[in-house]
Length: 608
Ligand SMILES: Cc1cc2nc3c(=O)[nH]c(=O)nc-3n(C[C@H](O)[C@H](O)[C@H](O)COP(=O)(O)OP(=O)(O)OC[C@H]3O[C@@H](n4cnc5c(N)ncnc54)[C@H](O)[C@@H]3O)c2cc1C
Image 1 (cartoon, protein in one colour):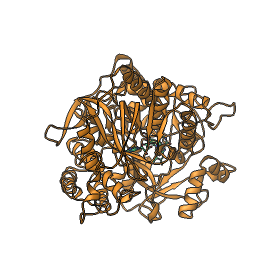
Image 2 (tube, protein in one colour):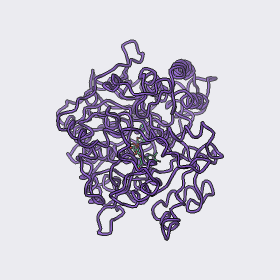
Image 3 (cartoon, rainbow, N blue to C red):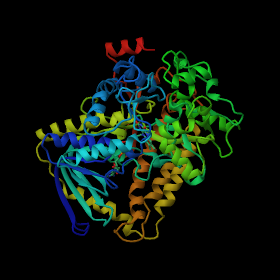
Image 4 (cartoon, rainbow, N blue to C red):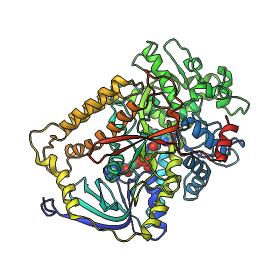
C-alpha cells in the first residue's frame, strides 16, 4: 500500500501533540502552549465532550475551607490508604501538595464553585476522605471544569483537531516522532509530526457490559502506548463504582454520584436494613461511625462525629452491595436501595435541599426512571467506572519509558494504587496534566526534529483500511458485545482463578475473530469501521486486566479474588507491569514498589 493509495494524508507539524481533550489533555495543552511552543490537541469527539464533563461530585483538594484540620498530609495519607499502599508515593505527595493551587488557579480562570457562608470554596464529604474535601459545583463539577479549561485554552493558540481518532504512535528509533489518525467525519488520514506526545485519552470502561463510561472509552491510549513499547502498570485494578442505575435496562450503569451519600444518602437492603454497618474493615474502624445518628451528624458537619459506613472506599461498598444482591436481599431490579429522601425526616426543607445539592441526580432519575428521589429511594448497583491501571510514568515528569511519550489523567497509572478515592481524579487531571504539559514542552525544546518513517505510516494506513477492504467477515459490534459480556462475567467485581484463566483463553479466541472483522460501507462517517478499529484496543487492555488479575493471587483494593480473599504481604510489595515482548506476546512482570521516604512513612504512621 502506498501513501497515495491510502488516500490523501494531511501532514501537520507540532512541537507537542496532546491526544485527548478532557481535563488532563486540556490542562497539558495549556501548559505546553504557555512555553511558546506549537501545540496540537486531538480528540475523538467535539471539544468539551470528554468524560471529564460528566464528573459530578467534585475535585479533591485539601483547601481546609470547611474543616481546618485538613492538610496535604492528611490527603496524602488518605490517598495511600485508599490505594492500599500500592500507589507511587511521590505522585500521591505531589498530588496532595499541588491540588489546592490547581483549584485556585481554576477559580482565577473563571470557575464558579459553590460557596461557604463566608464566601470561600465549599467542600463536601466523599468516601475515604477524612474531612470534607471536594470542591464542587452542585453535582456538575466536571462541566464547570471543562468549560473553564476550554475557555482558557482557546486563547492560548492551541490547534484543536476535533473528531479525529489516533490509531498509532510513530517512532524515530526509540523515541516518539508523532501520531497517525483519521478524521471521523470523512475518514481521511492525518499524520501528526511531533517531538513529544502527551496521552490523555481517559479510561477503558467499554471493555465491560455495565459501565458509567461513554462510547469513547475503549482504552485507546493504553493500547497505543503498549504498541509503542511503553509499560502498563496496575491493570488488574478496575474500579467498580458502587452506585450505578439499574433500572430501566436502557440506562443500566449510568452513574449515581457518591455525592448522594456525602449529603446523607444511606444504603438499605430489601429488609430495610442499613447493611453497611455489618462489615467495616479493620483499617477504617477507628474512623467510622458506630451509630446511624453519628453518621448523620458527620454528614451535617459535626466535627466530633465519624463518617458513616456508606462513605467507606468504593471497592468495599461495591462488594457489600454485591453480597446483598447475591444473598437475595436486593431490590426488585437487581440492585439495593439508596435513600436520600429520608433526610426529609431530619431537615425542614429536605426536598428543596436535595434539589439544590443534587440537581443532576434529581433530573436523571425523574427523566430516565420516572422516580422522584426527594420522595422515594433509588435502586442502584455496581458499575464499571474507572481504571487505576495505565501507562507507567515517572512521578515527577509524567514521561513513560518511551522517550518523548508522556501520559496524564486516567490513562496514566501510579497515583491511585489499588483503588481510587472519589474526587481524586479531577485533581489528578489538573496536577499531572499541568506537569505533563510542562515536561513535554521542556523535552520538545531540547529534542531534535524527529524523522517519520514512511513505511511505518503506510503500514498504519493499511492496517486502518483493512476492515473496509475485507468482505464477509464478522461484525465488530458482535465481537465487542461478546467481549463485554465475557469481561463482565469473568473479570468483574468478584474474580477467581478459574474464571480469569478462561477469560485469557476467551481473549485469544476473540483476537482471532477480530482480525477477520469487516466493516461494510465507505470511509465517510462509518461507525462500524470506527468500532472495528477501537476493538483491537479493547482486546489489548482486556488482556492486560485478565492476565494481571490472574497473576495477583490475593485480594486488594478493587481486585477481589474469592479464591484468595485475603491480602498477602508479599503481593503488597509489588506492582504488576505489562509490556509487549519481543515475540509480540504480552509479558507481565512484578516490579518493586517505589519506596516511601522517611517523611512519607512518618505521615502514614501518624495518620492511621
Ligand atoms: C459519570 C462520571 C462521573 C464522575 N465523577 C467524578 C467526580 O465527581 N470526581 C472525580 O474526581 N472523578 C469523577 N469521574 C472520573 C473522571 O471524570 C475521569 O476519570 C476523568 O474525567 C478522566 O479525565 P481524562 O482527562 O483523563 O480523560 P477524559 O475526560 O476521559 O478525556 C479523554 C479524551 O481523550 C480522547 N480520546 C480517547 N481516545 C482517543 C483517540 N484514540 N484519539 C484521539 N482522542 C482520543 C477523547 O475524545 C477525550 O477527549 C467521573 C466519571 C464519570 C464517568
